[in-house]
Image (cartoon, rainbow, N blue to C red):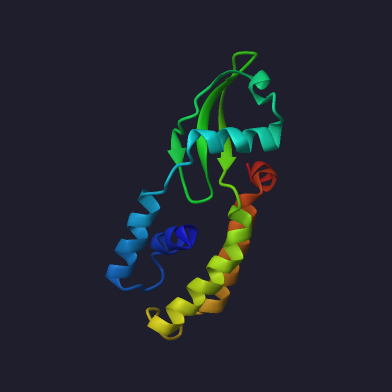
Length: 142
């Protein structure tokens, strides 16, 4: 749901009450970071127990954190400086349930103006989020 708030806070073409927009803006700026042990677990699950063999340096403290994952500064064995994206565990599974809950909440609260195509907006945002979780899709888009 953090990502949903982040996306909505950036959409200037829809009318959202200022108090809600400020809450979304705050959420966008205050993403939590994974503890070091969890970063190591994620690296081991994706790159194997010997993940350190790929790097001459790896900073376990992120240089950036967002809603889907965080970015770590590292250096490959050949000296190339790289940014390594580490996705939060379970993020893909939580997207759909977050959307269902968020959709219910905003309908109950009635915070979006009539005429806004909320279902279409939510559907498109869900697709975008799932694509963001697939770093190979992101690589193809660059």
